[in-house]
Image (cartoon, rainbow, N blue to C red; front, side):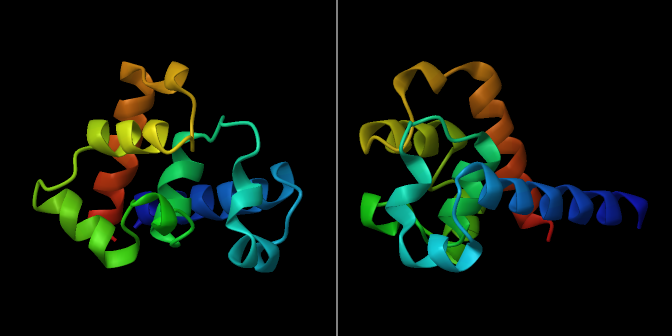
Length: 114
């Protein structure tokens, strides 16, 4: 229970920070997802959360339950997810590090356990 509350608190904090850092409200982000990534420096959380919310569907990245299912079934690895984000200019190639990919992997695993 403590882990779940901590996870929810971290997600809530990150969502709030996500909106403030990018200078857009949650409503604006839903309408204009292209503004979320002007500098190609999305954090792993922003990348995974944005994908889950459907902001990157135009870049060929699945959203919602499809994202979770594809990851869970092995059709999409964290490495492939990061490579697709680089290929579509969501993030810079300099972010393709072991640490970044591991963070994306951990966040994707957390989506499964939700």
